[in-house]
Amino acid sequence: MTLSALVESKHEEAAQLIHRSLVSWYETHLRQGKRFGDDPKPFGLFPEMYAALDPGQAIAACDSSGALLGVCFAHPRETHWAVGIVAIAPEAAGRGIARAMLEEVLKRAQAEDKPVRLISSLLNLDSFSLYTRLGFTPHTMYQDMSINVPVGGLEHTPPPRAAGVRLALPGEASRIADFEAALQGIRREGDFRFFLNHTVGSWKVWVMEDDAGELSGVLVSSHHPDWGMLGPGVTRDPESAIALLWRALDARRGEASVVLVACVESDVVRKLYQWGARNIELHVAQSTNPVVAAKGIAFPTFLPESA
Ligand SMILES: CC(C)(COP(=O)(O)OP(=O)(O)OC[C@H]1O[C@@H](n2cnc3c(N)ncnc32)[C@H](O)[C@@H]1OP(=O)(O)O)[C@@H](O)C(=O)NCCC(=O)NCCS
Image (cartoon, rainbow, N blue to C red):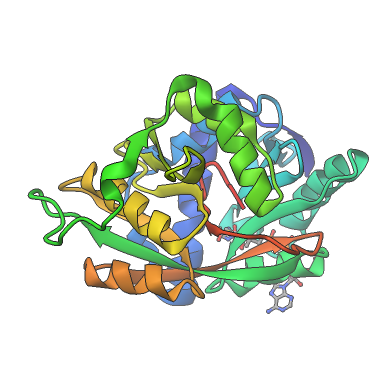
C-alpha cells in the first residue's frame, strides 16, 4: 500500500470508493446502506470540491496495481487542519490504512504546530475509535436533523429577526472569518471566500447584523442537487441561529435539508422539531487540542469538513 496525492484522473474512482464504503459499512453494521442511494456519482462532489479548495492535499491509498484502497481529505486552515471524509474499500478495512492516512495529516499539521479537527459519527465506533486512538478528544455532540420544507414554505410565522437576514456580499469573507474567530477560536477565510465566489458546488452565504451593525450570525447553505446541507455557520445567540435557519430553509422550498445542531442548544433543537425536523444521526466534534472557551453556536458540516 502506498500513499500519494489524489489526482484528478482518480476522482471517479474516489467517488465510487466513498459510496461503496459508506453503503457497505452502514448496511453491515446498521442495515442502513440504502440511505446513500444506488448512484456513486453524487459523491464525486467530495474530490472535486476539495481539489478546488485545497489542491494537492487529498490523500489516496493505493495497492501495488494502483487500485484505490482509501481516501482521506486534508485541509489546512489559518488556525488548524481539518479532515474530511475518510473512506476505505470494505475488503481492505481493518488493515491500518485509515490510520496511515490520518498519521500523514497529523504529521503535516504538526509541522505547522497546529491542531487537527474533525467531525465523527457516533453511530460508527470504527471511525470514533480510529480518531480517539490517534489522540483526538471528542468535545461537542451534534444531532443531524433532517427537514423537508414544503413547496409553499414552512407553515410557521417567521421568527422575529428573520427579516434582518441577508445574503453576504462577495467582499465580506474576511469580516465573516473574523467573526467566527472571535467566537470559536478558529479562522478559515479561504472557505468563506470560496463559498462567496464558488467554482464548485452552489452556495448561499446568509448573514445577520445587530442594531449596531455588528455581525450576529452567518450560515452557509448548499443549493447543489447532490448536497442538501446547511452549514457551516456560527451565531452569537439562539435568536440569530433560528432566524438564519428559517431564512436558509425558506430558500430551499420543496427540498430536504440536513443541519447539525449542538445537542445542548435546546431552543434551536426545539424550534427545528416544531418545523418538522427528524433526527437521522449523531456526530461528535473531535480535536487534537482541547477546545476551550468556544462561544456561540456552531453549525458544522461535512463538505467541506468544518469542525
Ligand atoms: C471507519 C473506517 C475509515 C476505518 O478504516 P480502517 O482502515 O478499517 O481503520 P484502521 O484499520 O486504520 O484502524 C481502525 C482503528 O480503530 C480501532 N478500533 C476499531 N473499532 C474499535 C473499538 N470498538 N474500540 C477500540 N478500537 C477500535 C482499531 O483497532 C484500529 O486501531 P489501531 O490501528 O490502533 O489498532 C472504515 O471502516 C470505513 O471506510 N468506513 C466507512 C466510511 C466511514 O464511515 N468513514 C468515516 C466517516 S466519519
